[in-house]
Image 1 (cartoon, helix red, strand yellow):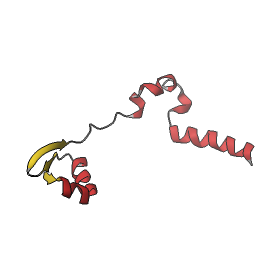
Image 2 (cartoon, rainbow, N blue to C red):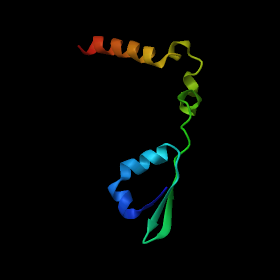
Image 3 (cartoon, rainbow, N blue to C red):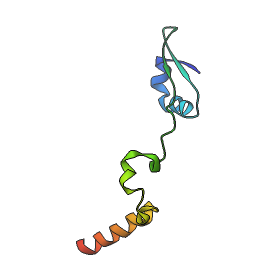
Image 4 (tube, one colour):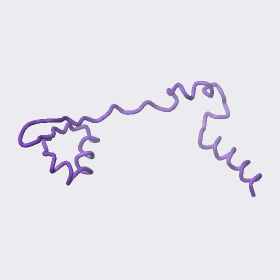
Length: 80
């Protein structure tokens, strides 16, 4: 897709949606190409993220949502 700076300002949401679908967008300024917008690679899954390394062997945290629900429930009992 090729678009001008003016169109980019007016239709930023639509252009970024196109980038999100995998299209490459070329930006022109007065008819000359000045920039290229490409999408980022998909982020890694959180289980592969190094910040979660110390929790990876804990059976209790295999289901993160259930674990958070459990600790929040305990927290609410103390606050109220």
